[in-house]
Length: 438
Image: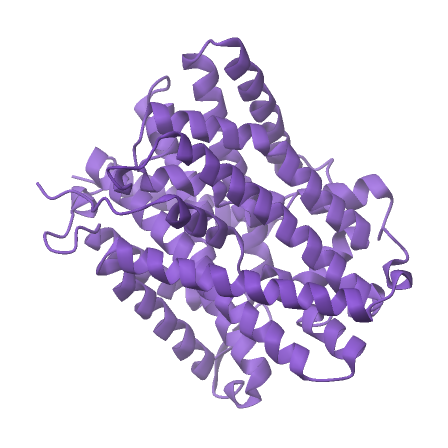
């Protein structure tokens, strides 16, 4: 039986995990972030979010050394919970990764249409008052097919592409932050919060799981590590990705609000680009920002695409969905049927258009938090060492709090009826695949 190719090293793991987190949200949704928390509320939300996620990162580092299985959360929970709990835990985590793929495909059309307004023609239909244009749809389908081919032909190709995109994004990031520091003003931060400090931070914290999902993707590639890869490097890859992700988002928010008064950016498309164009009275920063956003889009799409295929492959191999998804290509040593499945699903989701952008953020956040909660709870039950118990307890509390923030009406920003419907549709789809697997 063919096995997955073992070619990944530490820098590949970091690029895949970091890239899974950093896409285009910092450009496409900056006005939403500032509207939630104001500059300091949003910065503190991501900073605090990164810190309190450290115990969860530790849990995943422990799990991947104990059980290097592409099924991730499904494999971990299978150690202590019934099979049906294990399956739906993994299915929730698959949602957290997969839902990003059509999100990024839609975002490509939005970015391209900003540069080439002629793409906003040939309207096909509308969803939630948001038009779906044929040229933008074609662009999204093209990128999805490209990444599908890349991942079909080998993890080495995918990892090399990811490292190239990540390096370029970080280089552009340094340039943008330098420009903001040179041309901005502290007065642009006022007022620091959009509501009370606590509410501002909580509203930002609610979306942190969605935008920080990715550090725990490292275990999904555990079966593809180079034979010389040292196990402790899994923990390093997770910690580096988590720390850099929180730092990136926090500094991006600070750079944007330092460059221009943030209240004038609310409700504006691509608020990040508008802020820098206003500060420098020139268009070249916009070109740089959109270049960075496109690179980020490619790396985020590819990272989440690869993680989704590994989970789908692992489910097929475990027999919890149709077994053909667990096939490995004899020549390329890739989960080729899972790659085809994620490609098809991403293209289908793409047809939802712009109306899907903010709602999927909310649904993806809760799905991530559920997966983290299950992974932490499982390790708490199987590893009784004092230090591990302390870390897992903290992880359980943090992840469960994130879940409550989305399901309890007492919290601002809880699930809307539309988001519950979307969440329910995913559960029904998972049930159909599971019980129809024979």
